[in-house]
Length: 441
Image 1 (spheres, rainbow, N blue to C red):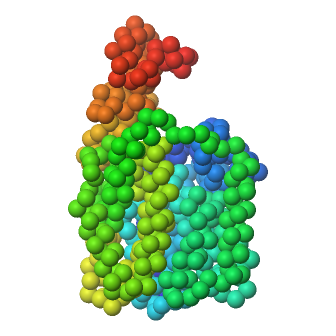
Image 2: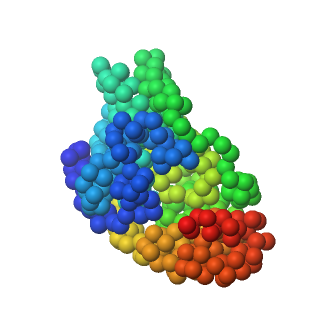
C-alpha cells in the first residue's frame, strides 16, 4: 500500500464509524436550523453564525454546510467531512512524495490521517473548517511543486484562507516548507500564496465580523491559566487518550506536564536526528499559536487545534521513522485502535457527555452538558448541569443565567427570583431575574 489509492482506501475504512456520529453542539443549527446559509451568495458576506457575533469568516465551510442542508442527512454530512480529511491526507502524501521516498510519504500521511486527536475535526461537522483548510493548503503547496501550477495555487490559497484563519498563514507555511527541504522559496510561488491569502484577508475585512475584546471573565481565566492550553495540546501528541470535547482552562494547573514534556523531548530528538526537521517542527509549533490565542475567548482546548499543525510534525517524525519500520508498525496499530475507540464515543450526545464527565468533571464540562441537554429538551437535566457549573470552583459564569431562565420557563417565577438572589454574588450580576424573564418570553 505505497500508493495514493491504497492510502485513501485504508483511511476511508478506518474512518467509516464517523458516518454514524451524532449531530453535535451547533451542527444541526448551522446545517439545518436558523443559522444555515440561505444561498451561496450569502456565505461571502457574513460571519460563521450570520449575526456578526463571531470573528470567524469561513465561507468555504458555510458552502459545505449549505450542501449538508440540501440533504438533511447526518450520514451524508459526516461522509463529506471524512472525504475532505482523506483527500487532505492523500495530498499530504503526494506533497511529501515529491521530496522523499514512498515509505516516508506513507508514514507522514498515515500518522497524520490516523492520529486519534483528529477525531474532533473530522467527526464534528461544524469543525470541518480544519479538513477544508488543510486540503486547500496542501493543494496550494503541491501545485507550487509542479510547473505551471503557480496561479492555480493562488486560488487554492484563497480557499484555504476562507476555510479557517490558519489558512491565512500559508505564505509562512510555504517559506518554512521550502527551507525544510533545503530550497529557497521561489519568488513566483511566494507571490501566488500571498495573492491568495491577501484576497482572503480582504474579503474577511469586508464582512461584518465581531472585532471587540474577549469577555472579561474568559480573558482573566486565560491570563491566570494560559499554560494549561499548550501543555494539554502537546500531551495529546503522545498520549491521545482519553480525549474529550470539553478540555478547557478549568483543568487543574499546571496542566498535563508529563505528556507535554515527553512530546517536547521527542521533538528535540527529531531535530537532533535530522537538523533540517527544525523548520518543520518550528512550523508545527508556530501554527498552534493562533489556537492558543483563541482560548482567550473560548477557554476551550479543542483537539481540532492540532489538526493542521500536526501535519508538519508528522512529516518530521516520518523522516526518522522511515528508517525504523519495526517501530512504525506497532505505532500505527496503536493509533488505529485508539481512533476506533474514540469514534465509538461520537455515536450519541449522551455517550459524549458520559465520556467527558469521566475525564473532566469540572464547571466547563457541566456547562457543556447543560447546553446539550437543553438542546434535547431535557429541561431538568439542563437546569441541574448549569447549576453545577455555576457552583464549581471557579464558577462557570456563562451558565449563570440558564438555571434562572429555565425556572421562569416552567412557571416557577418565585423560585427563579430566589435563585437569582442566591447566585448574585457568585455570578457577578449575570443571573438577573429580569434578564432571565425577558429571555424566556
